[in-house]
Image 1 (spheres, one colour):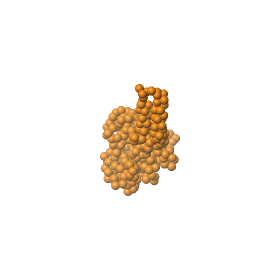
Image 2 (image 1 turned 45 degrees about the vertical axis):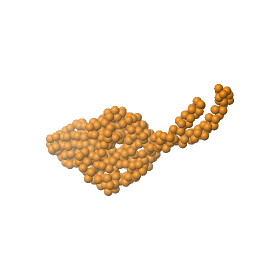
Image 3 (image 1 turned 90 degrees about the horizontal axis):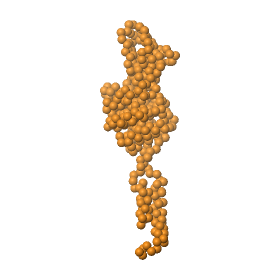
Image 4 (image 1 turned 60 degrees about the vertical axis):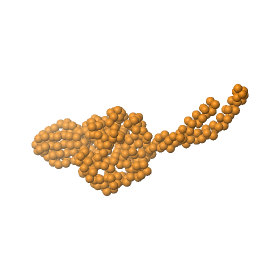
Length: 373
C-alpha cells in the first residue's frame, strides 16, 4: 500500500502544473533589438526606462528593479546619451523609502508619473503626470496649457494597447502639440541637463562661461543656462576654446549644443562640460544673472509610453512626429505553460497503472504468505 500511495503522490505532483494557472513567464520584445524600430527611436533621442516585470509588484518584491534593468540593458541602450537607464515607472501609492533607495542603488534617478512632489530632491526626481493623455477623445489642448501653467512642463501619458483594445492617438491634438514652441525631451534627458555653466572670467563688457558636468548621477548631457545682463545689450556669443557652437532658432526643439539671443539683454545657452563661451555686450551692465535654464528657453514637453512590451505597436503612430518618448519597458507576459511538463504528466498517467500492477504483483511474489496471515 505504501508503494501505491507514493505513486499517487507523484502523479499528483506532476499534474499540479495542469491544475493550476500557468506561472507568469515572459518573452522579450524583439523590436527593441531591431535597427528599424529600436535603433531608429534610440537615434532620434527617445529614452528607454523600466516599468517592471510581468506578475511581480515592486511594492512587494524589490528584485523587480534589478530584473527589469537587466532585461532592458540586454536588449537596448537607455539613450543615445548613455547606456544605463535612469527612469522607472512606479505606482502612485509608492512612498516606501526602501523602494526609493533600491532604485538609487541600481542607478535610477527619475520616477513617475503620478507621485507626490515631496519625493524630489536634486539627485532624484519624481515627475508627475501633467497634460493628460494622447488618447483620442481624452487628449485636450486646454488640459495641456493649464497643466503647463501649473507645473511648468508637460508629461503626457500614452499606452497603445489595454488588454485586447487598441488605443488611438488624437491626431488633432498631436498636430497642435507639434506646432508649439516646446522642448521635446525625455525624463532622463531633462534630468541630466540641469547643470548651469559657471562664470570663468569677466571684463566690463564681456563674460566667459565654462560648461559644467552633470553632478546628479545623470548622463553626460550638455547643460542649460539662462544669462541676463541688466543694463547691457548683448552683441555676440562665441566659443573660444576651439570648439563650435550653433545659433539656435525657434525651430530647434531637440537638445543640442547652441545658443539663442532672446532679447537685447538675455541669452539661452546649452553647452557641454568644459566648453568655454564668451558673451559680449555694449553699455554699462548693473547686474548679471546666471541661472539654470531649459533648452532654447522652451517648456519641457515629454510623452511617456507606459507598459511598453511591443515597441512597434507603441511607437508606430509617431514615426513622423517630433515628439520624443520615454518608453517604460517591460517584457511581454507569456503565461502559456510549457508543453514539456504536461506531456511528461500524460506519460506518467499512462505508465503509472502498469507500474502499480507490476509492483503489487512483485510484492505478492516476494511475500506469498502475507495475505494468509
